[in-house]
Amino acid sequence: MIEIDNISKHYVVDGVAIPAISGISLRVEAGEVFGIIGVSGAGKSTLVRTLNLLERPDSGRIRVDGSDITTLSKDQLLRYRRKTGMIFQHFNLISAKTVGENIRFPLKLAGEYTRAEMDRRVDELLDLVELGGHRDKYPAQLSGGQKQRVGIARALANHPKLLLCDEATSALDPQTTQSILSLLLDINRRFGLTIVLITHEMDVIRRICDRVAVLDRGVLVEEGVVADVLLHPQHEITRALVQESCPSATTGQRLGLSGPLFRLTFLGAVTYQPILQRISAALDVGFNIVEGVVGRIKETPYGQITVQALGDAADPARIAAAFGEHAVRCEALPS
Ligand SMILES: Nc1ncnc2c1ncn2[C@@H]1O[C@H](COP(=O)(O)OP(=O)(O)OP(=O)(O)O)[C@@H](O)[C@H]1O
Image 1 (tube, rainbow, N blue to C red):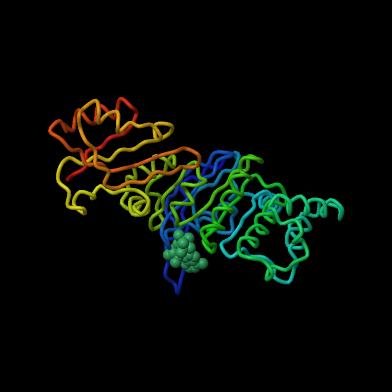
Image 2 (cartoon, rainbow, N blue to C red):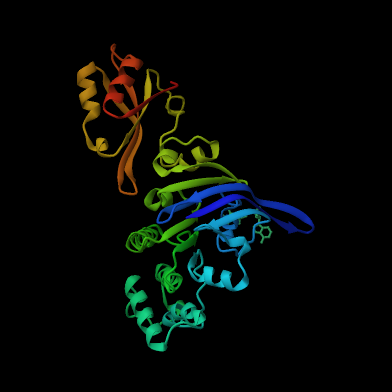
């Protein structure tokens, strides 16, 4: 478990102090996939890099499994870093080394394995990331997705407990992004590995994260279970980040619709049940779907749609109560 307690970090550029993160406190549970999202310059990289002390916070504490990593000795820090893998947006592979040599590198640095053990581990990791047969190739001979798979294999070499992902899919096309996210989720589940990832894409959070923190100008503005943050964003910056994938509260004004508008949120099995039809029949109200999205948050189905209620019986309180009885959240929107 990681407990980040009130950490701050600034950089000095041309004698001027630039705050990068300010007073951040967070808790990441063992075995979860924790996402940190924010726009460019929000402080995501700085925050994730404090978790292996690539950036040392100016103040505050970071406790991992109870011990404060900011007070570790040099040797203790080396050991801690060995158990903390990291992958990067631009992969950071050594171009003059083959795939096999790149993966073997952290094993060599650890100085704990025989040649045969290292060979065996490299083969095991190549199988894990589905790159068997690419061992003797050089990074330049690989696609972006394959390079990131090498990065993942290298990060996992010493059986880390924590994997840090710094915009790991930002340089990849959408299809390759999905395959890398699936691999990360598979690794998280198979090995119980804790993953902390940073991204500027809500879709990455939706696909694999359990919880998410939102950063804005170095400050933590919102944090919670992904479904709550995605479907009911509280902070303006979060709303902007989710707007592309979810209907907004200004739909009525935008589409010039009159008549009562409702935003309905379905989460779980209820998403696939004919609730609209049932309530329509029970209340004698028609529903015009004007906007919406249906998808999955990790494996959980969800839907969020905006409907216009039609008919004389379209009483907002009755409609909200009827959806509530079916465990569908119903919010009246300004029309
Ligand atoms: N090495 C550095 N020296 C000086 N300023 C820096 C340094 N690294 C980051 N900053 C500044 O700190 C702030 C936070 O940057 P950071 O890279 O952590 O944000 P980010 O959310 O990861 O952004 P991006 O998504 O663009 O990488 C920004 O104002 C940035 O310009």
